[in-house]
Length: 472
Image (cartoon, rainbow, N blue to C red; front, top):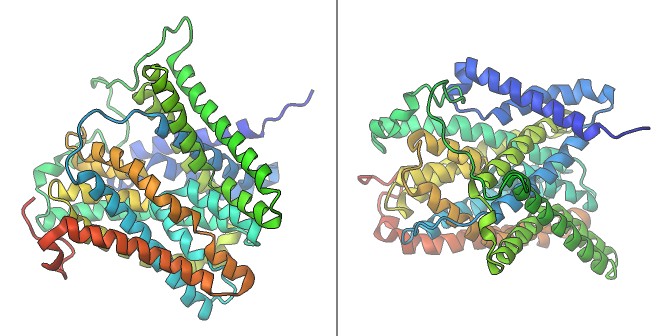
């Protein structure tokens, strides 16, 4: 009897990469110094193997890409099922965080599309017109979204966009890690934050990424069930998988309904499958509401959901980086490098400039978290925050939890319109491309209006200074 082993072989290889990366992180100061996530390091270790060695053994980067696609959606279900913290959020801090993140969507999308226009008119006339959107997808949204949406563009005749999106995500992680540590040191030198607030940076425990032997351990999760009936981890995982199955059924139903429209409906359905993570998150919210109505929401443990989400994200990042096709990237290396370099530099400058004027308390910590999530993922953003706020004693992380839901809702129209430039690619009509540029301008105007509301007099003072010179 023949059994299918490919998924477990890939999971085994990814797991071996994560373990090796964890060992390397404990021994090599360079990776400790710049807080390189183990999942990112594992992905780069496996990248050449999956491109040059494993294909001869029948293992494909396509399988890894599909794995990242599903792991992303599972992580969204887990995050959506979590109950929001009971701590009352501070006035203005939640929406201020949302504005700062949405501002980066607009900035990166605008820069990416304008650079795409320049490339098409100069060095790459054959470049697909949605190329620039892979900058905010890879930087501000992460490898899963970049691969998922990029791959869905195949229905428009674009090949390899998923792999290019993963490359932008990998470069975003690099910008986040190296840029974040540089920003912290720069902030200390220029008095944006006191040395005492970053004293944790010099502690050895965070460097290797392993809690030292003998140190008191924190609870990673709590039991909400009697294990003789069902394990808490099993029940929480089952709820996540049910939510993902519900998302699949909804997408199947939508695809069936849209098939009656014809080719346009089929293309729209393909787009929806690329946005699977949005439907997964919505099903997570629906399940949470059902549990709330039935007064059974207490069976979900937030810490357990954090652990499960962490598993999905670590496996997703490692598999996504390893899934990058070097053959495809060789054809696009120049526009990728130019766009990532310019976009990363502008992201760092605009994040600090915008956030230092919007926020009134813990300005640097909030700016640092926004920079982290705008160039990597929430996990990398929190890793940077932990350097200066190791126990999350400030309300910064909690406020972002509230803001993430609002950001997600306000970003849906942005994501749904990312296919517009592809109509220019297929038809040659540039109006679709410039409509996409206009959407990014609308987001910039929206965040700009509220910037003036929140920043007040600070909006017009010290405009040329990257950091608003005020006591923290």
